[in-house]
Amino acid sequence: MLPPHLVICKDEMTESVDAEQFQTRLWDMFSVRFDCLLSMPQIDRIRWHLFPEIRIAQGSLFSDSSPDNAAEREGAAKAHSSPDSLMRVMDLQQEQLARSLGEGHRVIHGVAGSGKTLILAYRCQRLADSLQRPILVLCFNVALASKLEHMIASRDPSNRVTVRHFHGWCGDQLKLYHVAKPEPGPNYHDQMVTAVIAAVERGQIPGGQYGAVLIDEGHDFSPHWLKLLTQMVDPATNSLLLLYDDAQSIYGKRRTAKFSFKSVGIQAQGRTTILRVNYRNTNEILDCAFRFAEDVLQPQDRDEDDIPLVKPEMAGRHGAVPKLLRADSVHGEAEEIGRELQRVHDSGTPWKDMAVLFPAHFVGDEVATVLQKAKIPCERLEKNSASRKYKAGEDSLKLMTMHASKGLEFPIVAIAGLGFMPYRSDQAADDARLLYVAMTRATETLVMTASRKSAFVERLIEVGRAA
Image 1 (tube, rainbow, N blue to C red):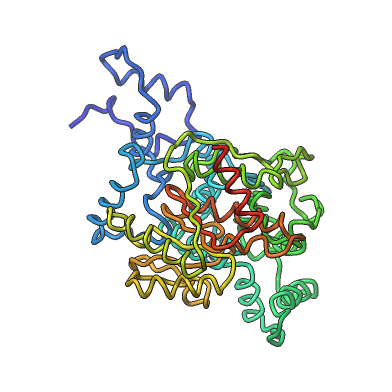
Image 2 (cartoon, rainbow, N blue to C red; image 1 turned 45 degrees about the vertical axis):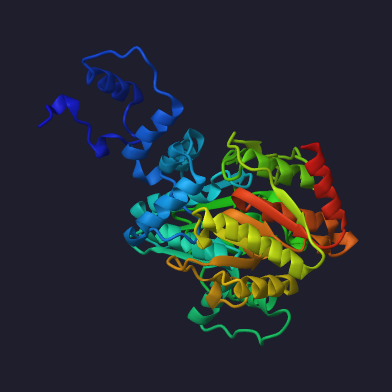
C-alpha cells in the first residue's frame, strides 16, 4: 500500500482546486529530483492516463471499437499510425476550452479538423452530469448525426442527450406536438421548418424544452433555423454552444445570407473562441486542399459578433502527397480507384477505413458497379436514410456524395469525377468549397481521379507542380 502523501484521487484533480497548492503537493510527492524535462509526447501520455475524458478514440467513424476486433484494429494502427498517435488526447487549448465553457451562449470558430466535435462531445458529457433537463445536439448532415450519436452515447450513461439532424428534429417536433406535416413535395423540408416555426410562435410547440442546445457544423444552418433553436434553450440555464467554420459552408444560399449572431438571438460577444490548428490532415493533404481553394477561402476580419473566415494552421504531421490520376472514362476512373484501394487493403488497412466520394450520383453508380465486380465490399451512405445509420461492425468501403461526407473523416479517401466540377461556371466558388471539404475528409491518404478536362482539374495540376 502507498502512504497517503503519495496518493492523489481523481476527485482531487478538478478545476476548483487551487493551482499553486496542487503544484506544491505534486512536488512534495517526489523524494528524488530529476534533471531531465518531459517531452510533449510524454506529457500527453500522462494526460491520456489521468483524464480519460480527453482521449481521442482511434479509427474512423466506421471503426468497430469492440474487443472482438482488437487484432484488426492493431493491424490497421500499424498500417497508418505512429506509436505516439496511439495515445492521442486533446491539445491543451482544446482541453482548457472544453473545461472552461461556462454558462450562456458560446461560439467556437474552428477550421476543419481542429477538434470542434471533440469539444462538443466533452461538453455534452459535462452537461449531462449537471443538468436535469434533456440536452439537444443538432447538425445538418444525416451521417454526421449518426457519428455524433455514437460518440455521445459512449459518454452519456444517463441517456438525456438527444442527437438529431435538423430536419429530423423538426419532424420529431411536429409529430410530438400533433402539428400537421406538409404534403410531400420538392419544398417539403422547407415547409416542415416553416410549420415548426409557426407552431412555436402560436405556442403549440413550447420553447425552452432543453437544458442545453449544442449545434455542430453551424455554418450549414440558415439564420431562421438558428433563431428557432435559440428559443429551445431553457432560460434558467441559457446554455447554447455553436460550432462554426465558414470555409466549410457548402450550401450557397445559406452561406450568402449575411447576418450577425446577435440578430438571431445568439448573445456571444466576449464568448467566442477561434481554433486555428488542423490536426486531422497531414500537411501534404491540407496544403493541397487549401492552395486549390485559396481564392475562395481568404481569411476575413470581421466584428466578433459576425462570422469570420479562419485560415487553417498545420499541426506538422506528414504523409504521402495527394495523387491525381487520369483516365479515359468514369469507368476507367473507377478501375483506377479499385486498384489503388485494393493495394492499400492488401497492406493491412481495413475497408471500413476507406471512402470514395463523388460530385454526382451517376459517378457513384459507376464506381459502385466496378468495385462490386472486383469483390470489394461497398456501402452507399446517401441512397436512403437506413443506409446512413452508423454500422460499427461492418468492414465495408463507404461510398457517398461530397455533400454527405461533411463532418466525417477516413484514413483513406478517393475522390472520383473531378472532371465534372465545377458543374456550372457561376457556381465555381461553391463547388471549390465543396471539393475543399471533400479533400479534407482524408486523414492519411488522398487519391483523386478525372476523365475529362475542367477548371478544377487544371487547378489541381498547377497545385501539384508548385508543390
